[in-house]
Each structure stands twice: as C-alpha cells, then as structure tokens.
Image (cartoon, rainbow, N blue to C red; front, top):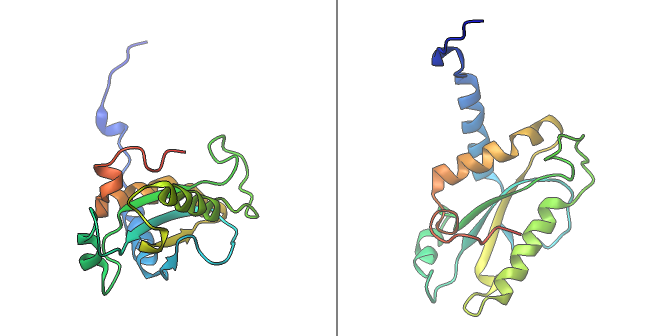
Length: 159
C-alpha cells in the first residue's frame, strides 16, 4: 500500500456546529444567576460559571464588572454525568452539577480570604444527547470569557 497524507481530507468544519455553540453561549448567558451553592438540590450535569461580587480584597475589581449584570465569570467549569467519560448511557437522575457547585463552595469556605456569600453562579443543564456537548461548551465559554481562575490561577477546579 502506498499511503499519502492530505490534511484537507481530515479536517471537519460545520457552520451549523459553530452556530450551535453560539446558541449554547447565548442560552447560558440568559440563565438566572443563583447563590453559591444553589438553595435547592437539582438533578443534572452540565456547565457552570462562578461570579465574584465581593467589594474587598484581591478580586475587588470583579465587583465593579459584575455589579449591574454578571458579565465576567472568575471561573468556568463542567460537571459530567457518571459514566460519561467511558461513553456509558447518561443517567439524568444524578446531581453532578449541584454536587460540583457544592464542592466549590466548600473550597471557597476553606480559603482564608474568600467568603461564599461573595460568589454567585450560573449554570446550564445538558441532558440526553446534549450531554455530549458538555466539554465543548465548557471550552467555548473559557475561550469566550478567559476567566481568571481558568487562565491564570491553575488548579481551582481540579477535584
């Protein structure tokens, strides 16, 4: 066999996919902001953003940015359903997203200079076939917002 390589035969491009990602970002930005952690347990997996609104300290400039509307997350993350990484069937009864937000609240509480009340969150639940977009939507949100704790501070979201 004689093998040749033509890169153009390996590159996938879809304007529909690009538009779908733009739609997910628009939908995400329209979801209501919640306290950290959210006041009610809920089921599902998906993507989320944390917003700092405290006036004092190292991150005080985020208060001015997010004072009237929540424009700049300090962190973007994902919560995948159990079995997702192994390609198993999605279980919509898990509370992975809620659990992840609770874990972040605990981490914030343990920090010396941060208060959970200075944080709000926004999230989007992706179910069934849409759960295949979780990693893609997280990456798109990180590229779009360049959150400080994703791009400068390493390790916040690692469990």
